[in-house]
Length: 197
Image (cartoon, rainbow, N blue to C red):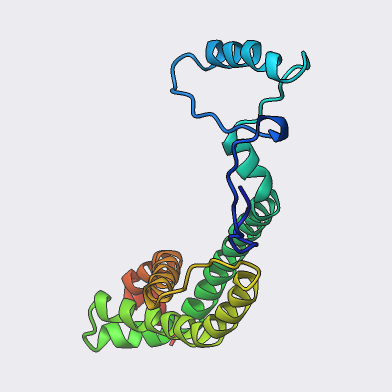
């Protein structure tokens, strides 16, 4: 009946028809409208002719967590925008790094480096930066999520698997963003990249 912001209090169930304020009724799915009409007709006898007010239980629970739903929606949009902007920045940075290393890539290819090796060297830098930034971001995120979860009496914990999954998703996004430019730079004919030397 209450949200997880509050601890479960004592409950007393009494059979006193003069003090009934609310009645919880489980209705089988199928003929909800007809059943509620039947309950309203019978309930009017006990309610001195006044119509009964119906409130589905899922709506009541939804009202208890309306703030969390809006917060989650806002955080979702902000996260999506942040990921998009970060990917644009990563792509721009990969273009810049590949242009700076055109001659180095050409020399490596002339000396026998495979496209795979050049690709690995280019993406390794970005993955290293992501792992370094994760070392800073994860403790801060755990602290902020802990503050938010402290608002609840009954709460879930954050496992190591959640953190590892986030790190893997980060690395996949970075590799996917950088791969196009890295493969393009690694596939260039070394004669083209070194012709002005």
